[in-house]
Image (tube, rainbow, N blue to C red; front, side, top):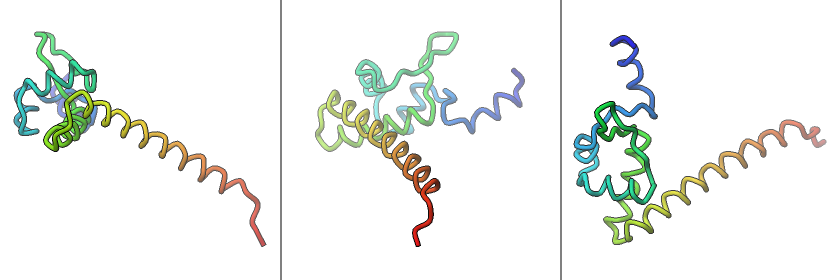
Amino acid sequence: MTADDSFGRLDDDDYPAYTMGRAAEMLGTTQGFLRAIGEARLITPLRSEGGHRRYSRYQLRIAARARELVDQGTPIEAACRIVVLEDQLEEAQRINEKYRRAAESTEPPVG
């Protein structure tokens, strides 16, 4: 992979571009928090060749939502479950919308 290829991947939401230290700094939290949500299986960071955790922008958004809930007093395990359920609900709503549009496009015109 060339430097140009690597640079282009930074636009990819799933590219693990951030170290644990940088991710914690960006979220305004501790590395321990990131480890805890990893242990709760909310996010699974990729590992560099040296074994260091690397986070994507998508993972940082999920971690930020969990942090928001924890900051409001929700226990970390419950916050992680809430985030998973929110994500599942959002996906179900997307699927429902897709089916609704498909059904509307196949219905004969009323009139």
